[in-house]
Amino acid sequence: MIISQRHRFAFISTMKCATNSLTHALLTRYDGRMPGGLHERRMDWVPPGWFTFSVCRNPYTRAVSLWWSTCMRHDLDRYGFRKACADPDRLEGFMQWVLGLASLPHDLLLTQSEWHRHTRIDRFLRVEHLEAEFASLPFVQAGEKLELINATVTNEQGMMDVERLKADPSAATLSARPQRRREPASTYLTPSAVALIRQWAAEDFDRFGYATDPRLALDLEAVALGGASDRAEGR
Image (cartoon, rainbow, N blue to C red; front, side, top):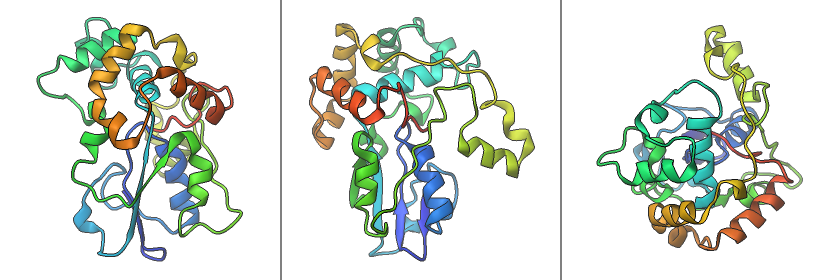
């Protein structure tokens, strides 16, 4: 969570939805500060009347991002998902494992609707149109642009990692590791993976108005990301 006393807003982040891009802008340009952790959801910390916002993402590309970043991007099994999943090298194998869990081992596996079950959000920005929708926020001045941070598809550290390293040189343990690029989401969204994601994120499709036709999701990804596989990945 990022709050700004000056601008009277609270950003309640959603995992795997452009967190790095928004965090960098809000902290450096809009007098934001971070009480608790980045992904804190303490609505009692938000004064009445403040503007609250978050980000949503097409469930198909979010599922691909979640799987790739935790199971495929580098060799470090940070969350233990590869070890626990019987078939972590395929998106459908990962989704079958997630759907079969009796209890979730990490909040990353929550759907967006589950994550925001008890939050009060005035506006959800869509990752697919993030720059334009950021510009429409009430505290953003005309002409100001959001710099999208692509911290996860190259072997270089993202801007957020640089800031963390400045504050704590020991923080280089994860982000400095070589990372593999992923292919466009269409490579992994097989018919069986699509069916599993529809089951997992059924509420997300309805709540955020995303079409269940995966071709529409892939078209939006290509337009929004300019051909890059995960420009607005976030954490």
